[in-house]
Length: 281
Image (cartoon, rainbow, N blue to C red; front, side):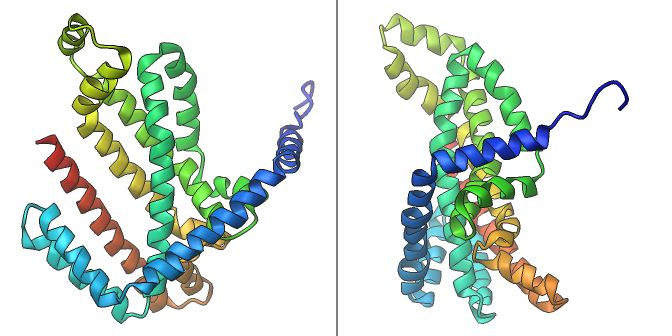
């Protein structure tokens, strides 16, 4: 570029990554080994230890009550899960389900407090908004690079990448929901002498929970969308089968695994939507 030399941005990032990896190696190793082992136990021992027929029945019953005692979601859940089991993809389904659950839980645990912080502080909102924009616009594949650098390959880096990718909606919707609480309610709570904590937990969060649940729904869907991508760094599940089908040009194998992901996505989406509707009523 003539007068302006190339800035060594890549070298700076490599140096920062190496420093972070070396400095916090003890923490990354602990997370990779202990947390990784726990994920494996949940997926392979606990969930796989449940008989398939029992798991399908339980999901069907939960779907029946979650949908307001309607048969549509229950029938879809039972038939969809039976189809996945029939295609001998049950173990892959349990691994995918575990990855989504852990990534979603961690995202919500991180996202809700940050959303509350943004709602309470204009400075925090100014700082976090561009950070969230960056997280949401960065290509998902890029998150695999630090995940592998910090945690090698496996389920843990898959969860790590999914958390970064899926957290912003919970943060944004929590902030939005709290800010949308009417000023009249806030003034009334102040008039009754409520503390900041009481106002948050007894007024603002209950009034904002429908919006927050919508954000959680989006977080779960984004975590699920990372399934195929995370399989590229060793995360087990249906995504790994999709990648295998792609690499071997086995259209049927990839399509069936992809259909399994779609079934799981619809079931989770309808569950969270119905939960949100019932709580918002």
